[in-house]
Amino acid sequence: MGYSGAAGSTRRTFVAGAAAAGGVAALGVGALPAGADDRAPRADQAQQSVAVLGGGVAGLTAAHELAERGFAVTVYERRALGGKARSMDVPNSAKGNRRPLPGEHGFRFIPGIYHNLPDTMRRIPFPGNANGVWDNLVAPREMSFARTGREDIRMPIPWPGSEPEKLTLDDLARALTALLDTAFNLPAHEVAYFVNRALIFLTSCDERRDDTWEAMPWWEFVRAAKMSKDYQRILAIGVTRNIVATKAEEASTRTVGTLGEAFVFNALGQGADGPPDRVLNAPTNEAWIDPWVTHLKSLGVEFRMGWNVRQLGFAGGRITKAVVEDPDGVRRDVTADHYIQAMPVEHARRTWSAELKASDPQLARCDKLETDWMTGIQFYLTERPPVVKGHFNCIDSPWSLTGIAQAGHWPDRDFPAEYGDGVAVECLSVDISEWDKPGILYGKTAKQCTRDEVAKEVWAQLKAALNDTGKVVLSDGKLHSWFLDPGVDGIGTPNPTNEDELLIHPVGTLHNRPSAATKIPNLYLAGDYVAVPIDLATMEGANTSARQAVNALLERVGSDAAPCTVASLFRAPAIELLKRHDRTRYRLGLRNALDLG
Image: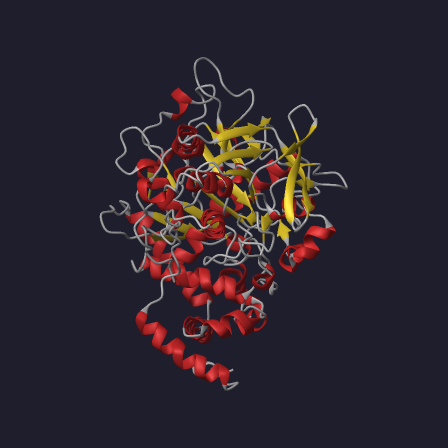
């Protein structure tokens, strides 16, 4: 059976797997967070009011930082706190005294390249945890590339203090087969060429990255059109569609290279907050969002749920009000001293009038930002499948599937005793990154399929990737039910819609991302589309943008409260010397010294 229910959570995708296996620079360790007393503003600033429009990660982060500094904060959220990052109850799935099955927009993924988000998590109290909800992070010990028709590439994720997976002789034989199969299917000259391109990017100065590489698609940068199918599938498509939800032919080389660079340094333990792959040890709301909201309420933050922002009133060069619909559909005017708009870009820009956009060109440029579908589906199983103990990436699947069996990472949860009807024992959470290519069952795109057809198609693609070498991982008889993100609507009709699209990164995106501070003196932007050091739509980006918005507000009002810390990207000293040399070459109009064409 399938379930449909109430709106989605996110994200983010499988950056962990593909990049942990080999990509590139981590966010550096920022300054220690200021103490609560250092954050408090002067008494004459304490009663300034801030309307935070949106209650996702960006909105909750902004509320957190502002409340600690004594501002009067009200958060207006149209649907559910946590936004795309929350978990949700599967309707009508609970029996007895159990809780409903846990659903989500997409599985959580909090790698060691994140620094600002973990800092916030450490400041959210959680019973029994010395480091707040941050202590609810656990590190999967392995990941895999699930090949269709070939042995899967299964890779450990080493980290100090972690215990390696116990492998059987059969496991070792399969791993060796997979590595040799892939190695021999990638010609030596292709491997050498890709390594050279990676080194070119690594040693490129910021100016070359922001100009030349931002304008070049990853497909062109790695010369994928002239390479083998395996090279294209693993090194071009596998690290773009599955990671940044952008087609390799369009994805910015700067974005793909920056994330790959970050994960290489993370895997080497350089400038990292923790392992390259971390997940929560319980459903997201239990482990993170609910404790966060409780803490914010204790700080005096007020919440208005079911309030939908329709328009920002603009006059005299300032925001005069936010026009919202309350839960009864009645239009109301919300007024405050300051407004932090923490809504996804596709929703935020609908609220901006032509006059408002004319007052700040960066708002108008947001119309050029592109979003696409990256949406999750959960399969509830009656037996734990023998999948990798971590994320898996089905790089040959038409719909670019990535997934993780979650219950095994929730050691303090007895899944059948606590969730559902007592029969399901596992939640296999899968992200669908490609919605516009035909599948293998119906020959239709995901958008053309009904919800039931999407579930059957994804299940078939999972089996094709995981059951293809004589080892049965998934079987129909063990499928209990499924739950597709209810933010997706109208699929199978001519007008499919998605309430939770994801910012994608085709070439040129960098130059259209706005700053957190706008030219309107009482309007600030927060969200994963805002320009931040991590060049990707992520929870880290949402958190970082909120910190930048709060800092801009503090500066404008002349507050003496300590600004939010904002961790920047890790920069290896030895590489910086090479990048300085490349800066000279770039200014002379020369190629990178390693770029032989």
